[in-house]
Length: 82
Image 1 (tube, rainbow, N blue to C red):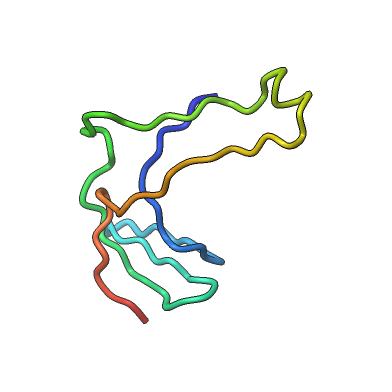
Image 2 (tube, one colour):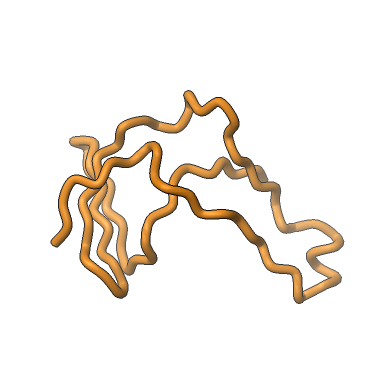
């Protein structure tokens, strides 16, 4: 399975995507946030993709951890915090 990286947001307890193009993030430790989708991410020049962890190396070594570098949101725009 391949997954394309979209955007990084704060850890949350719930994410609600609305038909109007907004996303509500119920945050775990900070303010709740409302984001506007600026893009679907299809137009990125260098999309970051991750491959499945279901490989032989991953199954043999339980210490392997999937890692990625968070970035500032490019596809989401913060509209309000509650």
